[in-house]
Amino acid sequence: TLILGIESSCDETAAAVVKNGREVLSNVISSQIDLHTIYGGVVPEIASRKHIEKINQVIELALEKAGVTLDDIDAVAVTYGPGLVGALLVGVSAAKAIAYAKKLPLIGVHHIEGHVSANYIEHPDLEPPFMCEIISGGHTHLVIVRDYGEFEILGRTRDDAAGEAFDKVARAIGLGYPGGPKIDKAAREGNPEAVDFPKPKVLDTGKTSLTFARGSHEMSNYDFSFSGVKSAVLNYLNKCEMTHEKWDVADVAASFQKVVVDSLVETAMRGVKDHNVKKFAIAGGVASNTALRAAMEKACAENGLDFYCPSPVYCTDNAAMIAVAGYYEFKKGNRSGWDLNAVPNLKLGER
Ligand code: ATP
Ligand code: MG
Ligand code: FE
Image 1 (cartoon, rainbow, N blue to C red):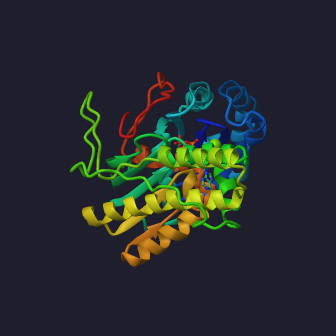
Image 2: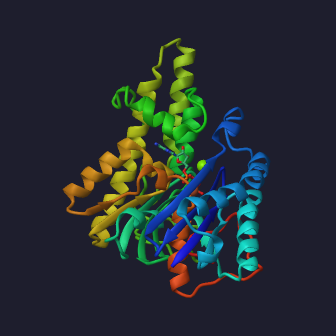
Image 3: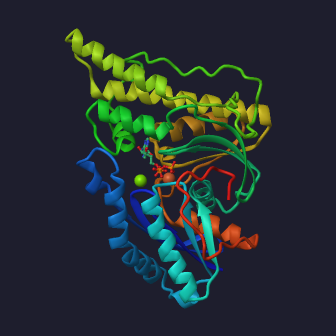
C-alpha cells in the first residue's frame, strides 16, 4: 500500500510517499525558515502564499524521488489541523484535488498523530501500546498510545509549549528564530549550572489522566509548565542589564535548557512508573534536541525501558509522518469526505 502524505500546517511545505506505513520512499521538505527569520517568527500570510507557490513542485518531487506516479498511489493523507488556517488549507485543497481527480481515498490526519507516528518509521518493532511524550512548537503532552491513532492524555502544558519556550528565550538572548536548534547548539559551549533558574513545580492534583469533561479546567499530576522558567530568564537578563553585570549566551542557553530537559524527563519517568509501561517514545520538534535525547535515553536505560525517538528530520514537521499516520487510519477504514476542512485548533483525540 502506497500513501502520499501532504503537510503544510506551519512553515514547512512537505510531501512524502510511504509504503505499508513504515518504509519511506521519499520525504521532500521545503522550509520557509529564511523567509520568516527577518520577522523573528512565522508570518501566517507569508506562509500561506509560499505554500501555494511550492506545493505542486514538492508533491511532484516526492513522487519522482519515490519512482512512482499518482497511478501507483492508494490513498492521499493530509494534515487538516491543528495549525495556521491559511497554511493548512493549501495542503487540504491540493490533497482533495488529487484524490478527486485520481478517484483515491482522502484521509485527513491530525498533525500531532503524525508526530507520534514518526516513531514507526525507523522502529519496525514498535507497536502500541506505549507511552509517548509529544514535545513540539505548540504542544507538550504526555500520552499513552493505546492503539494506532488512539491516545489517553495523561498530562499537558498549562501554559507555554516547550518549543514555544525555546523560541521565546532564544529571541530574548539574541539567537533569533528558529530558537530551538540555536539554543541546542549554543548550550553545548555553556555551563548548565551557571544560572539557577527555578524548576517548574506541578502540584499533586490526584489526577493521573485527563477526561476533558466539558467546561472543566482539569489539571493532572503529569502537567507541564514552562512559562515560569521563561520569565526567570527574562528577569535574569533585566537584572544583569540594570546592575551592568555580564551574562553569557551559552551559559544562559545551557542553564535554561537543563531546567526544561530535567522537567520533561522527570514528568515522563513519573508517568512511566505510575502507569507501568515498558516502551517509551518522544516526538515533535523539541525531540530533536541533543541534550534531551541523551537525558531521555539515560533515564530509560536506568528504568529498564525500551526508548524510541525518530531521527531529527522526522521530529520536526515532515510529510512522511503524515503518510504513516494516514496508513493506519486507512487500514482502520477511516476516510474523509470532500467536505474535509482545515481545523486550526483541532485537539488531540478529536476528529
Ligand atoms: P506543533 O507540532 O505543536 O503544531 P510545530 O509544528 O510548529 O508545532 P514542530 O515543527 O513539531 O512544531 O517543532 C518546532 C519546534 O521545535 C520549534 O519550537 C523549535 O524551536 C523546536 N526545536 C526544533 N529543533 C530543536 C532543538 N534541537 N532543540 C530544541 N527545540 C527544537
Ligand atoms: Mg516549522
Ligand atoms: Fe509540528
